[in-house]
Length: 115
Length: 116
Image 1 (cartoon, rainbow over the protein chains, first blue to last red):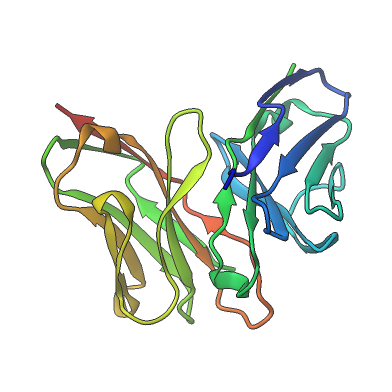
Image 2 (cartoon, chains in turn green, orange):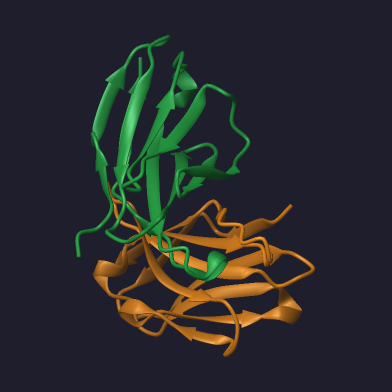
């Protein structure tokens, strides 16, 4: 079974631009979560989508948004990029068959650099 | 709010020596507990998890962890370190919730170096 895929793997943008990152979950998985990883703040939860609905949201500004499609693929969007948005963005998928105890499988991440 | 503390941002061990990575959580109700590993330029891979039942949990690659409620700890161990164990390790929790929160709260990570 193919793992979680994220595209693109690397991205360079300038301040003020917007960016869209994509995540394809493992086949059959209906939940997709997004995390931001930075050296200073570590790993932080952005949001979780299940059946096209946002179920949980972390403490990030409204510039960070996401959506999920009927095939469970998810995108996250960051508008008006700031230097501090430079990070590794990780996507994780799970079956969500048994809520919190389900294993979340992570993709390789998208490395975003904001200049 | 849940928090996770990993003692030691960097741990070095000799090849063949015991690996001990420490994790403490703050919660009055035991959460679900996880250990993930991250190799350079890769995502996170689950090593093991504790939900309910046996407090000693065995994971992949010879790792295990013991849930100790009285100490609010979930330390990760491996009897004999291998060069391939060099990576960054993250302890994470999900609060016990009937609402089914899926939000993993991670510790800051511990970078493990293995000396030949």
